[in-house]
Image 1 (cartoon, helix red, strand yellow):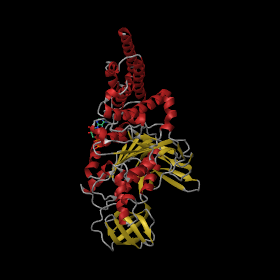
Image 2 (cartoon, helix red, strand yellow; image 1 turned 90 degrees about the vertical axis):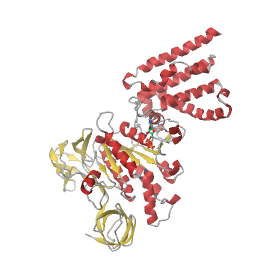
Image 3 (cartoon, helix red, strand yellow; image 1 turned 180 degrees about the vertical axis):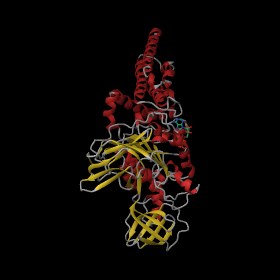
Image 4 (tube, helix red, strand yellow; image 1 turned 135 degrees about the horizontal axis):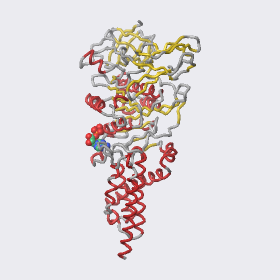
Length: 590
Ligand code: ADP
């Protein structure tokens, strides 16, 4: 094995000489403890190495072993349900080997070498196949069929393929490639994490990733394959939002990358996620989830690896034709790790000490999301949606990490602690959040829910914005100074906020709302508004309108179960009847 010599150790940064055979991003093993590191800079024969394990006790003169390979992950059955560290070592196994403290230099494969999987071939000997083609499946969990694909770069004819029970390293098929070589296909492939996995083409985002969360789906939808950013001031409901997305987002696979600052932040996730149930199947959510966790006893540099490990695994399931949702929490911690390494490399610092390339790295990460036509001849479509939490110090949105993220993501769910204090949950601000996917999704919504949905959403948003302006006036001169029309705007805005946007994640029915139900709810609110406007013109007082008993039923419509959606029709009738009676009363009194 080629080897260099350490000439400097500075925290997670090790510099070694005699490294002329190393390449940037190659994995190296540092010292005889075999600590895992990655070359991040080359100058002549000197390499700067980012070490993913604690470097204390490592000194000048010790060896550095080259592997000649970039940092890679193992992709195959067994990923689902795993809890990995940033370099894809299974945390449970580490614990078995080393007890509670992660001892250093432990080498553990990402996929179990002992576990046996039942492989069912879907292609046969003699079939011509190309890269990305599915040649068989493995039931990975009750929720996930793992597709075994021809790895990128391989095209040819299947020489041999057999059903049976295999370990991930066993050969399940042999392909005679176009250049005449026999290629053995195992259940497992390896892929370098910094290299995006190939696909045929990126498709435009034209379908929403339904989340069942009304404020998101109605006002700030993310598309399948889209990108979103959610800042998380403490106590604003970030964890609840993330759990709700993991549970309800219309995705078959969930990848959760945790770069927590404090050890217990991550422990929460590790304790809570395995408890969550998949609401559709009733099975544990973990049966379609992969967790990547940076525990507090790993150095910050490992956060960087965990982000890449996570997105690569997510791309792999996308390639199978699945809708995958990746959540990274928090990307600010990753950026801080970049800052620390950059400082140690004595690079020229950019804004607030972050390296100048931080923005590029963040952009490259989100660019790996998307809806794509995957490799393979069957025109599969897969989607990888990426949702990143950011945690700017003091919730300050001018923070460079937030700004760099907002430049690339298309959706911003602005969690505000102000709303959380008022117990308005989800505390996503309707005034500062945005989704740039709305124009792309219009056609989908129009086909599925009709033009009326788009009109209602626009009207509702405009009413909420008017409310914000009117609130200023009310603060100065009081509610009574408003015209009846403006008071109605305030009433309707309140109804949109309380009867529609408010959503209790812990209520069995309210926790999830389908697009169908959402559109009915919106129709009810708008119907009330239109009839009230008309009533005002007929001299009905705003007080009488706001005191209509049917308001109580509107407030409770969120609890109408999905399978009793026809109840909205009777509610509609009742609203119409109520206004008719009000008008008749005014005429009678006149
Ligand atoms: P954070 O992770 O931002 O510190 P949490 O997600 O833990 O905050 O939320 C704090 C508390 O806010 C929760 O314990 C819960 O009581 C309340 N909460 C947040 N979101 C919702 C929601 N959608 N429905 C009901 N309660 C919520």
